Image (cartoon, rainbow, N blue to C red; front, side, top):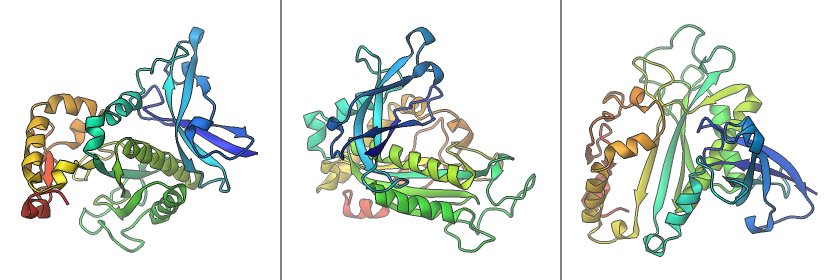
Length: 314
């Protein structure tokens, strides 16, 4: 018998940012989500259903090896539906899967490379790991990609997460210490289409399980500490087949124009609290103004220097 950890994503909790999971046992190994049964949970306890009609149905969508239990045990990404088969409002994966399965989209082989920044917090005092309680470390500068116990806080968690993701089969491609002490980043991708979302959410789940074991709190808050400190974002690198072919820079510039015309709508979809981070300071663009540039970290869209030189994405 195998442990089967179901965890639902697509903003599974009613808050829109929390992951939930539960486990069950199955009698034999499986290789595809279609071999797994649907399941349910109490949506009234997550803010997603009323108590008089509380069942939310889990549809298995992706499988990863379980780095915590090992063996043939698996982690299963699910999305969430009503008993009538309608996606619940927080299920954003359903529409994404429809988009990514469109033949026109599939033909463009969309690549995503996602850079997830996060901050580690001391559990009982809600203050960054490595910071003196009630006080501040020295100013930013020596912490980015740093080595040493006075500059790097939480490397054991970052490394454990890296190894666990590799074991699970997540397309994790790197990690580094960030500008603010106690802050880290890892990268997932290049991933194609819906896999990018499944892999980044699975990696977040694994990271939160590891911080749970370490007695440290994970936060993805965009600006956990106010003042002269960098925030934490989730930069997304993106290209299509036509952007990677000769003449691709013109396609890139057209896409940037289209993004500029819907800037406010996109910002509204990116989550809460970004106005605290996107100020135009600390390597960010202003939340109110769309901009792009080459190798400019203060822009909304940053194009790589080599992309400009080769006139296509690489």
